Image (cartoon, rainbow, N blue to C red; front, side):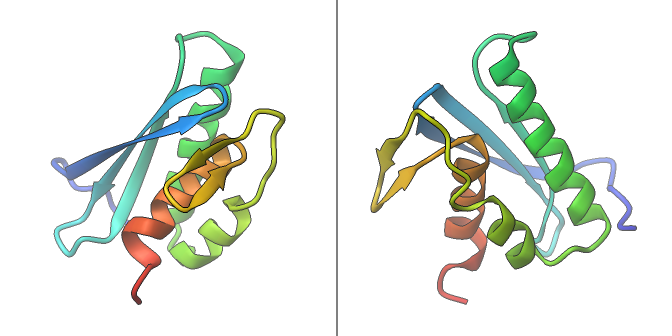
Length: 111
């Protein structure tokens, strides 16, 4: 399992979803590899927020156990929900789909 440093550099991406704006905070190691993902949408205590939170927690756990990012993204992309919305050159189909596509855009495109 990867150790989490005390201090991390983070970037935040805002992705529109059919459920509202999803804020994806990705914390990186010094080499630029992602190590932690925190997802926030809507109000604390809501079902939508719970879904976003668990998505981030499980991605973080997978990263700590060195699951390749490409495998994580492959599992997230194209999970469909009822509310879908266009984003850049794609369609956001759900919270997990949004997170997967944000990770793909930042870390896997042009590799």
